[in-house]
Length: 145
Image (cartoon, rainbow, N blue to C red; front, top):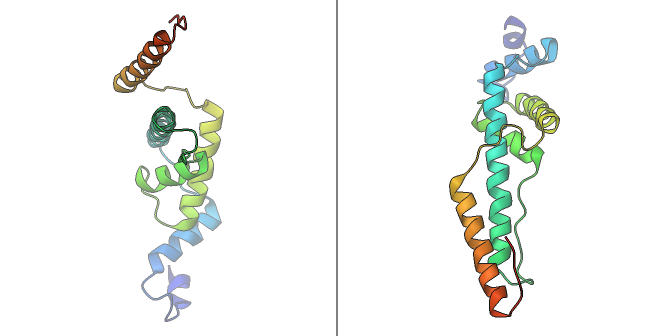
C-alpha cells in the first residue's frame, strides 16, 4: 500500500484500493473463490441461458419468419454478468479473470450439468406443442406425441 500511495497522481487519487487489488492480482493471481460461490455462478449462468434459449424458441413460434429475432447471450457474456452480479467482482481485471474461469467451467461441465427442471417452461412448451398438433390435425396431418 505504501508503494501505491507513493505513486499516486491527481488522476488516480481515491482509487488506491482498486489499484492495490489490481497489483495484488498481478502479483499472486486472482483470489481463490469458494467452490460453492463458483457453483452458484454456474447455476446462474445455466438458468439465464436456458431461459433465453426458451424465450427465443417461444418467440419463433409466435412470430412470422421475416420478423427479427433476438439471440441469447453468449457464454462469455453470461460469465461476465455472473462475475459481476453473483460473485461481486468490481474491477475490470477481476471480472475478466473470473469470467474466463467461469467460461472454462461452463464448457467443462456442459450446459446440462445440474440443470433444474422448470415446470412453467415445460408447461409452456407442452402447450405450444399441443397447439401445433391441433393445427396440424385440422389439415388432416397425423401427429404422434
